[in-house]
Length: 316
Image 1 (cartoon, rainbow, N blue to C red):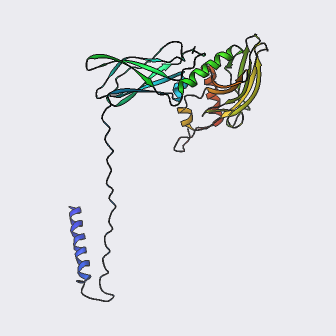
Image 2 (cartoon, rainbow, N blue to C red):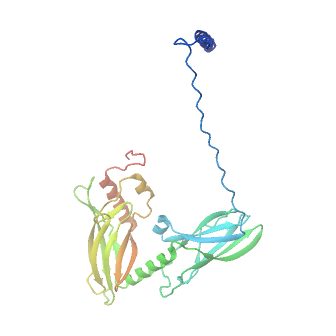
């Protein structure tokens, strides 16, 4: 009832004000001011997205590797189902002459029409280091409409994932003939180990005792969480032969970034890239920490940061 009385009162007041304003026929200062023309709102008409082209009736394939894939020593073959029906893969096998054997993919699941799905492949320990292939194929066995089908298709690898994986592993094998490289479990810190402290990782070099090839470790690069040396690069400048004594090399480290996103999303915080030469030939490979070393490293980084900032600027 109070709302109705208020509305009637407001209407009466508006009517009185309109009467006081006159009928608009009088000139002079007492006349009503000209009414402002209403502004026109800008109306945007959404442009519809173009429709998808009709299915080509083919399966397509390419290779990708995320940071988490790399940390888990795997890559993925992605299958694009450009047909008009859902297919159910029963077996996905990648063939590439740069590997000794065909590689069987995992995480098999349905692929709807005109959709893509990635299937994980574990990197083999022993690639074929003496071969020069530049591409591979994938064989997909699948069910569609109650029928069993199989097709073998070329695999695109624009980022050269397989070349990088095979080359890095072959490099590791040549290094293992000279020395076994690893990270020690302990990660120490300067001072009381609190905010602003500098950490120290230890590179363990166990030589084989056999003369022959020469390994030069030029530098070690960091990742989104941990940065060795200055500006994320430790200039090692180490020359190693198999008949030298084994040694332990301290590597200083600092947190790269003190934000929660970096700590939460980086699947490669325990991986460090080594730039090396083996008998004068340049190369790069990744040396990962073991589980205990990784836990100690992340504990140090959090303590050195003091707190982690969130994307919104908060502290955690």
